[in-house]
Length: 188
Image (cartoon, rainbow, N blue to C red; front, side, top):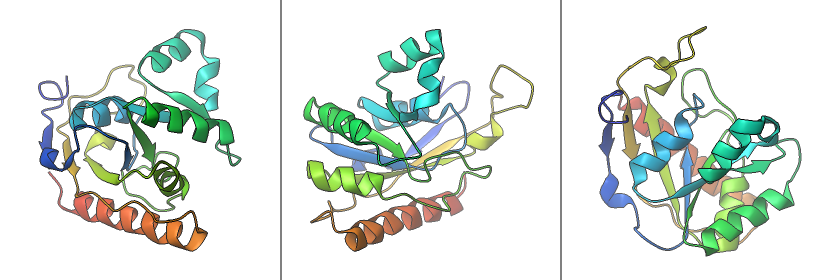
């Protein structure tokens, strides 16, 4: 679906480590983003998802099969961090959307430190991934995505934070946001 329906282009696949712990960070514009990110990096990626999504019975089961785990976005959710660590220990990559919610234009405005914290605790590098054009696949009132062209740009690895110091985590996460927004500026 990525390559045929959305005419997806993926740039930077050589930047993805094929094994070992990895924290994948991305911008976020649609609920199609988690499978797009996972399909683009070529390895299993478990994504944090807002806990409200797990209240929907059939959807709950589907997203759990895909590797999603709940996070309480209104608090420092230790259970979500433990889940992320378990996935990393089991060979998965962990995916987080830096703003913690969708943005209308696909850019990052208010990145959260959680991804850098998880990377520091797991001693995992951070892989910035930019999704361009995904905001155009949603048509208001339609249950189906529009076949708009999308581009995925995978940046170079960002070094693991050396500590869980808030200042260092903030610097790392701001670097991630800057890289992703610069990749977004490249367009299709």
